Figure (tube, helix red, strand yellow):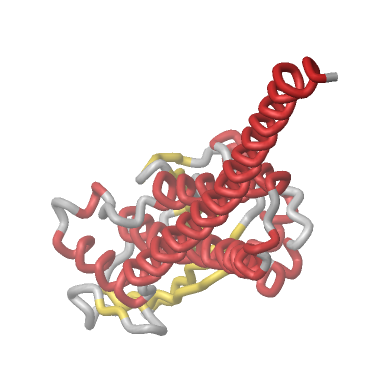
Length: 265
């Protein structure tokens, strides 16, 4: 038996091809689902996504800390507590002729770049989801505060509402266009075992249902902003209506004065 540890870590910036080649001279790079896969040795890989998550395959925790430090990430030495992260051990066992996955371990009788990529992708997506979940928690609190003062909203609050709406739109774009959780990786279509590996991991990591919860929260936030904006727009319309009414009253007053009162003076 051989144990291989996968560790996915949130990082505050996107890792580029140049970043990886600088740290690992002679690195063999390829792409999967818009992410970079770096083959360092036959059993050691690094998986850099476009949504600010990096996955280390078969690295020690000290090696991970060292790599993060060279990327100037302040929390590198305490990444286990300071950054969102998730790990998953894999046991290579001749007894498993097909992928077997439970909530604690991946078991399979072989290991290669494709397998490492699929595991890294699923684990990266899980961490990416958690990043979005925490971000949405903050926006849900903002939405709650918005509802609590809904009756006190004024026309001058429209700018803040637009900023909040823009942040929600950006978050939705980030999730739908970068995490691409609804599509299976292309490399699994012609490989039943790889498809089984990804499906089991997606099930254990609860990717689909977590994504659905995020979509529900996004819809709720969108409706909240629309309701608040409609409320402010209604107040703006009422304000304009009263201005028009007063202008008409003033015009009537001057007309009465001009044609009735003034001639009798």
